[in-house]
Amino acid sequence: MAEASPGDADRFTLEVSASASAPATARLFIGAVLRALGNEDRIEDLKLVVSEAITAITGAAPGTTATVRLDAAAGMLEVEPLDASILPPGSIGMDVISALFAAAHIDDQAHRLVIPFGASVATP
Image (cartoon, rainbow, N blue to C red; front, side, top):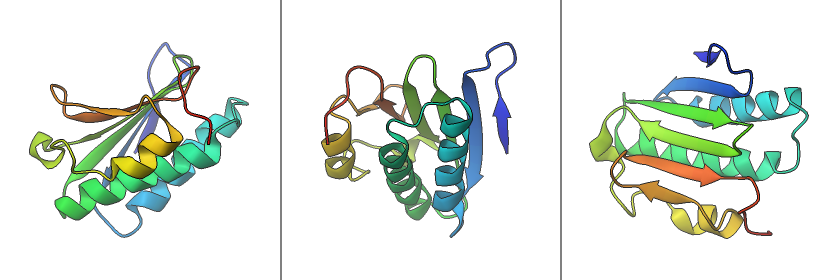
C-alpha cells in the first residue's frame, strides 16, 4: 500500500509483501513519485537500487514485508524489512548500490538500508 505522510507532501511510504512482483512494484512507486514531484535526475538509479534491496530482503525471507520510504525534500530513500534480522551487514549486494550512491549504507541500529540521493551521491 502506498501513502503520503500526513502534513508532508514530499514524504511517501510503500509496504510490499514478498512476491515475484515486489521489486517491480517498488520500482513503479519510486518512478511515479519522483516524476510527479518533477525530480527525475536519478530515477533510473534509484529504481535499480530499490529493486536490488527489495529482491534481497524478500528473497531472504519469503512471506516477509518491506517498507520503502521516500523523502524527496530531504533526498533520502530508506528500505526496511519488517523482520530486522533479515538485514545484517553484507546481506544486500552493496557493491551495486554503493557504485551508484557512495553514501548508501546499512543502519545497523535501525536495521534499514539508507540511500541519500541529494548532494552526497556518487557520479555514475
